[in-house]
Image 1 (tube, rainbow, N blue to C red):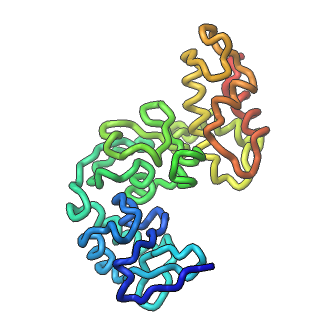
Image 2: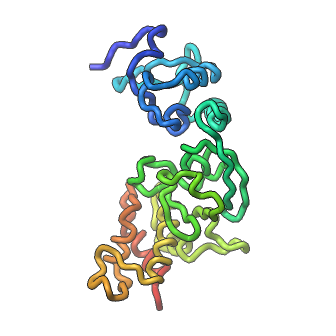
Image 3: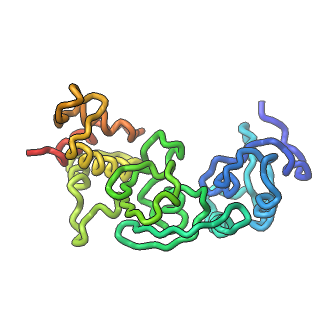
Length: 262
């Protein structure tokens, strides 16, 4: 049974959790319950023109809404305002970060708690890396940092200061020629809805480098031997990237072709 909706006057003091939506500014600040929010965070909500109120559903979550209406979680103007305010010192000491993303150099001011994924998508409008689980479990946010595959949702932006970040959109050559993995994914139709595909491609590109360096996996036996290019090795090394459409057969075939040592 859904909980009753508290009066607006009590909304700020309830212990109901805030929504786990990527734009929610107080969630990015690390606060899980409204009762934990500092005065600065509550002031941020009012400066967005909203108020604390529960969602009208059985989960009884709390979200920021404009007076008298429910705002979609990705409502652009609210997200932009939240991003602008999150980089001030009211919710954390801002830091300067310099990094190169897909060949373009950026000098940014970021909150020290901001992840690389949020920096890419919300500050520099690079949407290739997808926000899936936001817990490092699905692999949709996989990018390459200095050539190594990482989960952008688990990596702090500050850790990438001075690094070179490559998303699936930046794998193609300067002349526009697709990366070998991208060509193989097209040839083998290794996608359906495409949401996980950028992460799959970046993970495959990073995995090819690891394999070329002779790094063993969990299924490499014996570990001292150089790993063999088999479907079992590919499946194990790509196991951190989930495809909810189930296009694994095409993904394995594409990676096998892209990395075929012959």
